[in-house]
Image 1 (cartoon, one colour):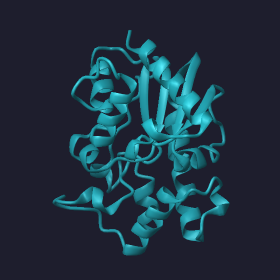
Image 2: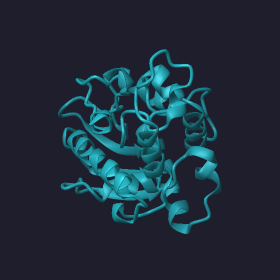
Image 3: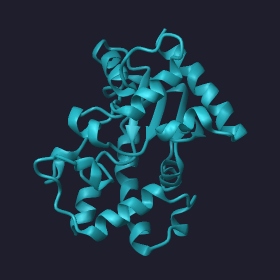
Image 4: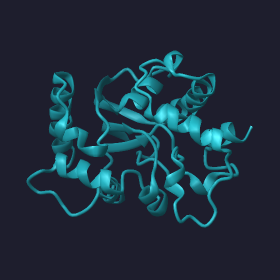
Length: 222
């Protein structure tokens, strides 16, 4: 039962020290733009802030090409939250890392079996659009275990009537389909920002949606 406990860590269990909190508003405070990403990695685990590593730096550079500050997207949004500006929010499908290498150099990494790490790698890397199309029953089960926590955190958020939701990457989009009560707001699929996908995507849909993300992000910080 170790893997279910790990994937469903809500901050009160035995794996709470590996959980990176989302950047979401306090109860009752509405957000205008929600960016849904995958999971924390090395820098996020170290800093306790989503998208605070190299991927976060690339993401912010894409969103603010002219006045790009020398920091990552997560810390940039966290600073705005500290100043009571919650128009932009960031949420991870999994608040705990899904990659074993996220714990490189960590004093006390979680004690998970090699098969558990293999299953998490499968759900993160697979391009399957539906959970049923994942290659193993273990991966299907693990992916489904993430849905209740995601639903719960989404359910606690207040989205403005005009809010836009951007789901970044196939894994995020696949898990989004498992929500029993998805928000009744426009949801736009985009690539994950890792490996430069925001600047080198060729899909027309993604190009248009990324342009909309950049526009809405600019509005959310002015």
